[in-house]
Amino acid sequence: MEKVDQIIRNRRSVYTSMFSGKEVDDSVIESMLENANWAPTHKLTEPWRFTIFKGNGLKKLAKFQANLYKQRADNNGNFNETTFQKLLAKPLECSHIIAIGMKRHEVVHEVEEVCAVSAAVQNMWLTASERGIGCYWSTGGITFYEEAKPFFNLGSDDKLLGFLFIGIPKSENRPWGKRNPIEGKVKWVKS
Image 1: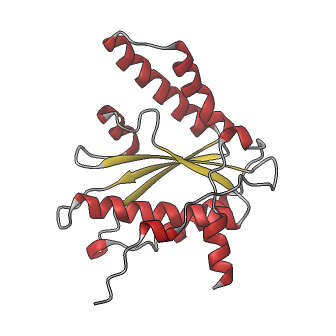
Image 2: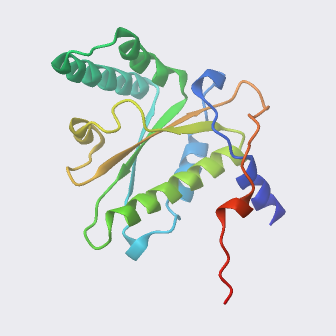
């Protein structure tokens, strides 16, 4: 149990600026995905859907999201060149990016599906952390663009819940974690 406690408490967000540029072996990604598949799931709907980008796939994702942003921003008159360039560049800082999708099933409430996918992502994150791989979950960019869904094989009732950015850290030193004491977040009812 001490090992499990340690893995959970040492999980951190490791941002792309902290990545070394070295590639994560696909076997680690496959292990992350297999462990994601064992997350709790209401009525066994298994709503998680993942699209993995690596190599030239990262360039394809970068171009897609930057162009979709530009199209939307041009239509709204609020295009920002810095944002556009960031969307083109950030994916290329990663070894892999996993797009996180939720396939909607009508047999359970939507929040239950979101919770199941979140548990799957936590399983991936813990797996990566235990192996010394850095990652973080981002809901930026095109996450909330309805017209992005088909690119990730998601339907109109499905959700794109963000991206897991993955890379090998430059250093073994992880950011320090900080949490307020659990006592302020818990109420015991004993009678």
